[in-house]
Image 1 (spheres, rainbow, N blue to C red):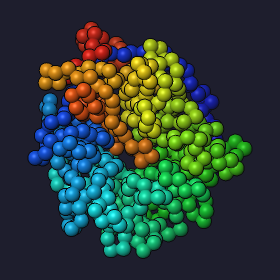
Image 2: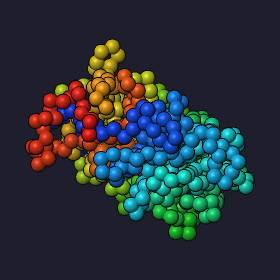
Image 3: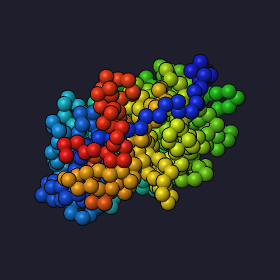
Image 4: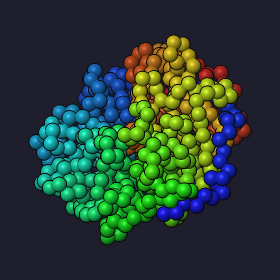
Length: 492
């Protein structure tokens, strides 16, 4: 496909942050260390996902262990009711095998019900499954390895179990059936032999690299989008209608060069954003945005990562239902793109009253930035501070150039009358398999995250405060501005 350079690209906006508005956050506790759930006691949490209705899902540690359970916290009125969905060493429904770890949560709201999906390896090392729970009820299998079929992992050496999810709750995943690749939506009964499409959701460099893989996106009950190859040609393919694969686009021609699609960051019925690699220079790549059959170069001249990455960081990102894109590019920093605002960039350095030393958390890989259809981007960063720096969660609205520090290490929260200092953050979002339905930011501008404190662990939600001048702010700003270093806890 030939790419035309349109006006939105010609007028790139890479200006510095023009406004800075930092206030104390109001934190709402979801669950804290010692909280009771399903006959056990909450210890800590890793991945946290947040639905638009305020419900929360998490991978949690119970009874002084770690990452051994899936919890669902249903929001009602001003508090949460907790359910234990699945736990290590529990028997998998319909099987004699046991759960043996959990990963890749997603949470959607369909018809007023919250649907939690997760993947799990099992005590049988040759088997794995995808499972679902509605409103915290007992988990049931979407697919469990058997009858010659096994789930495709996301990397070349047994990476996480990759799957795609849609806003209306459909789940897409891949299997191998006696060596042949298949795709499925919701049930193994509608398995689609991918036929000539190979490498679907698999490693994409000649040199295997477990960190470099693609994402499938389920659009509805019979449609999947992803990256794969046909006769050695990489492309973005749509399995829809009769589930016969058809290319959306393959080789991308832009300027004097040609690019091969390598990893899908997101897709809808009419839009997609893909990371592509130059056919003549594997260290040169770009992000391309598809809308209604036309491709726009968002940014080129970037390292496409994978086996060519100069560090452990690869380009990662995601796209919302209306086509808002947020990504982390190791050579560039954070970028945001939509067809109205164009391209915006946030780099390390001084931005008003806030200085960003590095993206991500100390000693951990950078995770994909979260983004919603209101144009807010939420991300982790290291700010100046004592010793080696202060970890923080920030919110950035590229359309208005507003940057907010939501919460940071060293902040004090009061829980049950006791002051606790935030010591660090637990990871809230996957990286390569990231998705707007699989992270801690929702469309109500709420953010959920997990922290460690001087009094144990906790999961909180907070809201991104509206832009200055809105009616809500006029009432609240005087009290909030006094509380930057001591975020209040709702209902204390």
